[in-house]
Amino acid sequence: MLSVARKLFWEKGYNATSMRDIASAYGCRPANIYNFFQSKEEILFEVLKEEMEEIIAPIRYLKEDKEMSPLAQFRHIIKWHLKITLSHRRSAGLLFDTALDHLSPEKHHLIIEYRDLYDGVLRKVLQRCIDAGYFRKIDVKLAGFMIASMITRSRIWFHPGKGVNIDQLSEFIFDFAYRGLLGEPEPSSQSEKNEGR
Image: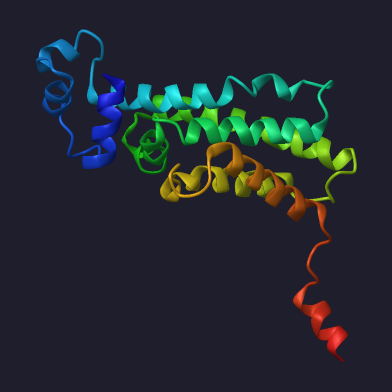
């Protein structure tokens, strides 16, 4: 039922999707849905929560892990986030961008807590990479946002039949981020002006 609702929310929009639409697509009467969910908002909340839990579950332990190398941890986060992002739940993640405002303050807060947990793990791993000398000193908050955005927005254009599979894309994103964080920062515009004098 969540899979059906997820698809309809993305195709029609949350507001335009009714409980009757969900019931019809699922093959039951609208009244049957209320045996499982109290409202359409609760269905939306479960759709978003399910994906966040699947993203976090394989990486949660990395926040305290001191055995795996920081670079291996970084690669692991990218790999698993991308796999969930590009799974059959693709539409749910795009819903995340547009649907949070439809949740009650309490449910909205719970989803944000999941996101904050993910951000905390990624930032911790990025800091370990800096401390170990793999990356130059960077703002781990900004770097985390950019890396997560790269992964999440790949939903829009990725198609497995267009020359790259998920594993290849995962390695590309890792290499792209690694080289960008490893290199020397670009000179500021003021420095460029001074060098040109």
